[in-house]
Image (tube, rainbow, N blue to C red):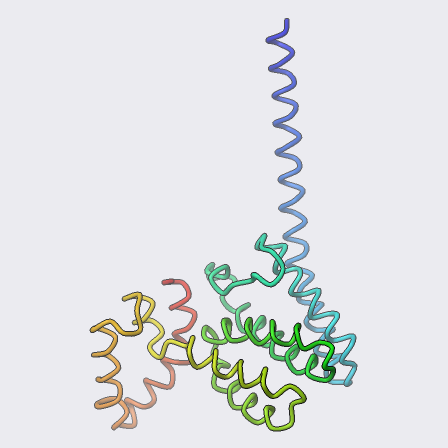
Length: 216
């Protein structure tokens, strides 16, 4: 009798756990769908210079990403977006951190948050096609920023963390492996000296970050 009761309880507990897991997964899926509306809302607020509301929407978006990928606050990483269906989200995340970086610069009280955004942005843009654009805009923004030291810190981290040969670096696991150095030399001494070669290099850096992320 006791054995039968234990089996019944175990089966019931297992069913409850499965139901809870299904509900949890459904909740994550719903949050993933809701993220689009948050981004639209935030960007509309940015266009209307409603920066407080934009920051709130962006922070909710980041929170959704942390819940979906089950990571702690401030620990969102590019490696979590390896699935091909989520590669394009890397660019969205980077653009969110870029906007937050500028919003938090408006008030010195948010220097800590701005510093976190700088660190996160530096880690994400290496896998996106907006790398060069963000770097250029950050260099201009640094001149008028209230916290130029944080922007300078971001630029330094971005330069240090970005592998110059995305796919090769991911494949050989080092930016300084002999194979990567040979490819880099071929790029500079052969490809960049011809029109077609320069076009190839341009599209390589535009398209390869997603492939490199999958390889990583």
